[in-house]
Image (cartoon, helix red, strand yellow):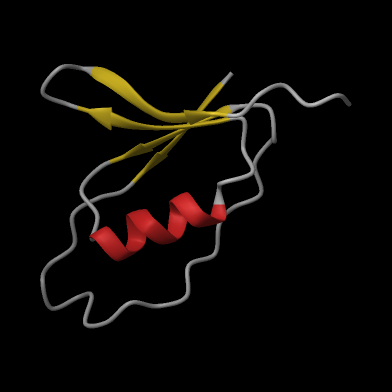
Length: 77
């Protein structure tokens, strides 16, 4: 199952400095796809917050594909 976290572009004056990032509660066995334009600090914070997930990917709109960053080996339940 894929879960897509979609971000919308904000006006430049909207984000003045990085704020704490709260990662939503998501199933641990799903594939997380980050989608939409975001500052690099937000992308890094989300990747760090989601590092225990089975798979993390980002959506590439030019190719209409998801690019996977990592796949965790299966863990026994």
